[in-house]
Length: 327
Image 1 (tube, helix red, strand yellow):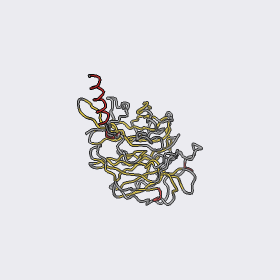
Image 2 (cartoon, helix red, strand yellow):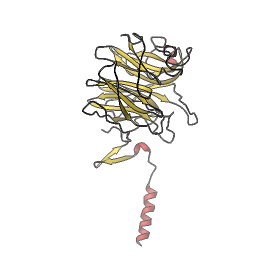
Image 3 (tube, one colour):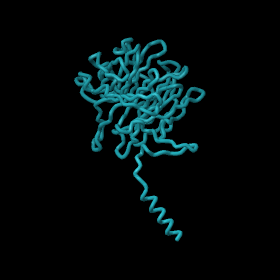
Image 4 (tube, one colour):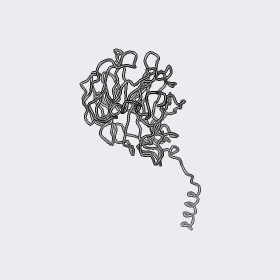
């Protein structure tokens, strides 16, 4: 009788089960239910995140991965923007910028970043140039962090023929822009070689020569941020990509390599980071291939985890989590 009751109970339990979506899965920590908040966008594939803290919100800018399952490369025609006031609930805004908004570009809405200066928002993007071979960096401008953005400059800021250290035509990608305490703006970018240059106050022209930085196993995706008296240059390291970083007391270096910050991004060959501080808490924003069954290198998803500093200013290794940021 005991075995019969056990079998019947098991049958009832199985029959009552329903299919649970990955985003509904919860774990328990310290006796409390914890929802899986990574990835933060679950209805679209998003990659190459860049975040902007402006007033009381964080604005997240990302490329839209549109590649079908049988297309094994990037298919990206537009960028997306989301905002949050708590790092948990994200609001999607209308598409603010597409490759077709740049008359001189032909394809590829690759990695980009938005920065604010004097009430205007400047979006530095990677695209394929229409007449100059290779990737190029353009700038679009808006009066709002959610757009719409317009290519007021009318031509590329950086083109492949301006950098000759490599023989590849995709070395002018992944722009990141930083405004130093003295008001001087800098742009960093590159693949296999890390380039940087000053920007004029209008934010749409270079102000001086293009320089390079020697970093161990630099692949792409540079990101500049500052914490206390330290400047941090993080970047995609080796391939498949990890995230590593270097530190300096000056935006112009010298840069001291500090090691790996974030390990391989699961089933995505690339990793691309954005580091911000919002309401006193540092965050590490990145992508991986976590939406299943079709997520991967060309169908990526943006995630967020907390970042921690050591007393000496170095950063603790970031561990990717499914739980992400909790309220």
